[in-house]
Length: 227
Image 1: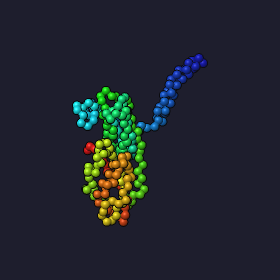
Image 2: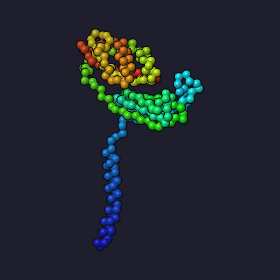
Image 3: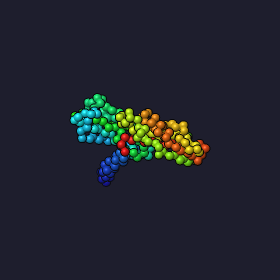
Image 4: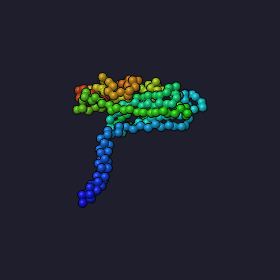
């Protein structure tokens, strides 16, 4: 009788031990941090394009990094493409910063290289941006007319050639008397100083007022190369 009991206990232990190990594995997996709130992918367009302006016939292909911000936060990102060789500009890698608004998806880095030059690696790192809104007067209402703000005309030519784009969040004051925004500062940079300065100049063409004596507000101007 004792021998039968020992055999049954051995069988039970053989069944229970794998279940216990499985439960431990599930617990470890569930304790891992969640995936980052953004995704990125490398896209290659094989249609020939000029390696440099005016080159004929075109010989290069285009490698682009696309970032998708899946969160409700503003992200500051840095994208990098590294080659097994040199790109069309003669560099082994290219790094570019980018700001993505909540739920935004776009190309942040586009590079040209000869077809035989392979991409060795690509990567994107992002951090959530904390926007300081402590100076805003939330109890005041604003009326801002931006019909005379022309971003196409304000877009710096150097920024266009360098493919710089992104949002600039401006903070400024308005009064009861209609007029241009005053005390304009950059509250959220595009990470490109030329675009930030162009945004400050562009918003000066707007006209606004508030129902308070003086109110502090924010407004976003978005520089985009392609609509």
